[in-house]
Length: 254
Image (cartoon, rainbow, N blue to C red; front, side, top):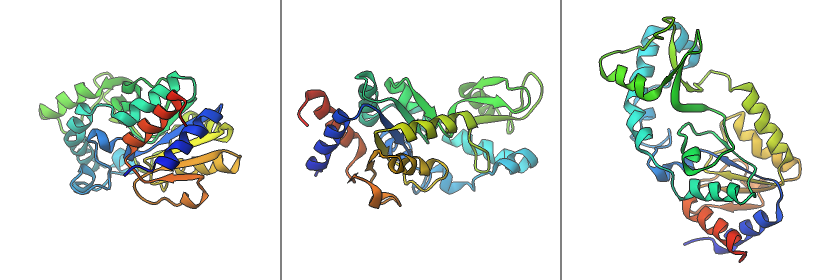
C-alpha cells in the first residue's frame, strides 16, 4: 500500500526546490534484477571480496576477482532501467534534478536517459590497464575470460587489467567525490534512494546536505542510520514511489 501522503509531500518539495540532487544505492537497481551484494545467493555471497591491495599483490586474489566478475557479467549485461531510473531521468529533463550521484556501477541511470551522473564507485561498463590506462570493453574482457583466460592482461603493455569499478581498499576518484560533496552542500532537496547509508564516504553526503539546510527525503526498504534526520522517510518500492511522486509533480497535483 503506497504512502500517498508522504509521496505527495515529496512532489511538493520537488516543486519548491530549485536545486535537487538524487543519491542512489543498490536498492534502485534490485527492481532491474541486480542483486544487492548483501542479497542471499548473489555473487558476493559466494566469493570473499578481493581487496585492492591483494589484487595488486597476489595472483590467486586476481584469479578470484576475475572469476567473480565473470559470473556476475550477465546479470549486469541483461539488466534494463526500471521505473525508478526512468522517473529520475524525467525529472532531470524537466530541469528539476541537477544531478544523480550513485554508488551503483551498472550504468542504468545513463541507459534511462540521465545525463549528469556521478559514479562514486566507478563503472562495470569497461576495464582499464593499471599501468598504461588503456581501456577495454567489459564485453571484450568477458570473451577472454570465457575462452579460458583466468587473469586478463593488457594487450598493449602487459600490465594488470581491472574493472573500472572501485574495489574495497581502493580510493574513490577524488574529482568525482569532490564534485559530489559540493553538489550535496549546495542542494535544497536531497533524495537518498535505495541506499543503506552505511558505506563511507558516500553515506555522509546526505548528512552534508541536511547540515547545510537541505530537505532530506529517504526512500529505502529498510532503516538507515539517518532516518531520524530525514524530513520524509518512505519504505515503499522505489520504482512505484518515484513514478508516483514525479508523476504528481509533472501533473501539478502535489
